[in-house]
Amino acid sequence: MKTGSVLLAASSGTAGFGMQMVILIGFIALMYFLLIRPQKKKEKSVNEMRNALRVGDEIVTIGGICGKIVKTKDETLIIQVGADKTKFEVMRWSVSSVVNKNKKAQDTASSGKGSAEKQDREEEPRRKGPRRLKKAEPEEKQEEEKKAAPQPKKLKKEETAEQKPAEAAEEVKAEDAAADAEAEK
Image (tube, rainbow, N blue to C red; front, side):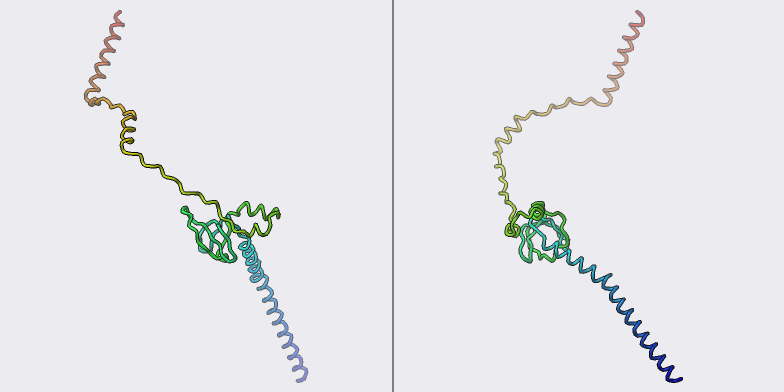
């Protein structure tokens, strides 16, 4: 009987070990499908987005800087930021998202008519010349213009608060006298 119980214990031990291996392998597969695979998909889409960046796209970097792409290179981008149009260079991997795609880049990519050289060519936006300031007019002309401009009319000296009620009372008395005269007729 001892030999039978030893064999039975050995067979149940291997069955427990096999069950533990199945659970371990199932847990690893679950982790792969829930964590690793979605992360790789997201990473792939972000890399595609960063490689598809074109001149004119508006981007946001991982540091929170918003700007418009002015020039592209292999691993870097030159972006234009702010009202004073400051330009600086950032790495491609620092782009977090694209806010607005450039319509020209979308049209050439969708039509497929543009050659690869044209798409890869770095474009500079047209530069505007500095604005010319008006020359300052001599002081004499400014004084003449002021004199030639119509002067606002000066208002008569305002009546005091005491005079107004007195005149109003006189007007009321005159109206009453005229009404009495007409009533007597």
